[in-house]
Amino acid sequence: MQEIFLKLRHITNDRTLSPGQKARYLSLEAEGMLPYPALDVETQEALDQRVICDMYEGHAPYKPRYVLPDYGVVLKNGSEYLELPVPETLDEAINTLMIAYHHVPSVTGMPVYIGKLDDLLLPFCDGVSDQELYRRIKLFWRYLDRTLPDAFMHANIGPTDNRVARTILRVDAELKQIAPNLTFFYDPQVSTDQILAIATNNIIECCKPHIANHPVHAAAFDERGYGIVSCYNALPVAGGSSTLTRINLKEVALRSDSEAHFFAEMLPRYMDLNFRLMETRIDYLFNESNFFDSFLVAEGWIARDRFTAMYGVFAMAEAVNILHEKEGRAGRYGFDETANVLGHEISRVLAEAVGKRPMDNVWRDRAMLHSQAGLSTDVGTTPGVRIPYGTEPDPVTHVQALSPHHKYYPSGISEILTVDETVKGNPEAMFQLCKGALACGFREFTANISGNDLVRVTGYMIRLSDVKKFNEGKGSRTNTTALGAEAAELTGIAERRPRVVGHELSPSYS
Image (cartoon, rainbow, N blue to C red):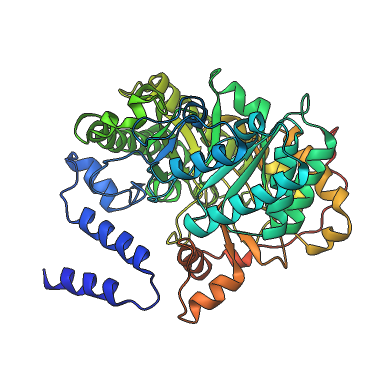
């Protein structure tokens, strides 16, 4: 008990934390003092050994990990609970959203989804000049970063080419904030080359936005649609994800005698244990926490039957390399065709197993497979199905090696192509690389540009200048700077190899 008191006292006296950050850390410690929802012996052992992982979501799942309200509901109806009238002007619509965001929970304590903003705001833009729209969006964007300073907060725009989307892209490139994260939905049948070029030029400028392959994503959901949230997670609008648990494929491979043993015994065993962990956490959320008695459900912002569960995997690269070594093969993941095919087969087996396992209180009765981007404390493993940092090949080889995985991960998969800053003199190369990657089957296109201050870690953003100040003991007003500093120290993100973009990967590439 004395150790716990000392830890709490350390938090309250930490000069680098703001009062709000101290309150957040203290609440996490309090939640960690509660008993964990009861697990069977095998599942508990696998969790303790971190072969499976609960993402440290907490001992009492009293709220879903990710919540995606249908903000169109509150703009159409107002809110009785929040005493908000139906907005009639752009200012009133933005003000309504600003208030709504503070009542949306998530694993971070802040909203991870702030809506498809062009669809939400366009109906209120009649009579608003381009200059006034720019001024209002810029104030709104600054408000979001200063009052919800968390890089997992995520906005969506597209696929249409419209003035709100263009204005958001203009403001985002100018302000270069870590928040909000941003995804442009690209549909070759709807989006113009002009707005895609603006988006890819923004990537060169500030490493945002993600570019989502909208037709591929949309096919995995229903008519009510989906949102991209947090890092790059695709989930049902008006729902979300109750939990995200994951399997460390490296640890599964280490426990396997051979490739055959991995597929026949070890992978099925740990997949089952990860399902059990998921089911226990979901049962608590739905049947004990009373979360779904909230006004969010009563007013139709969310529906309890639209919450899925994210079945995460990571360390694919290490698993493949370990299995290759056990079989006496020298090829390495990302470079050798046999190694890459083995990785694709692991993804196929995972997707098939997740698709066959029925689950209670889960949208469509099945979890959704997810290529998980890693934690800042993951040492010796590579996020999701990515190629290890520092070994990345040229962009064409990179895309060819990983694109076959993407069809198996409907709740999110993303690679980060690190591109040399010389692309600033050739923006057409980034445009073509993006179109080519999406044409090859990428669900999501993401790139970092070497030399930029604003960079992606696993999917969220940090500013390197903020990390430098944090490491000097000056703290940070943004909640995710500490995670980025830890990831830089422990997981090798600084070792990513910037590559020069060639012209080989065009949309006609096959």
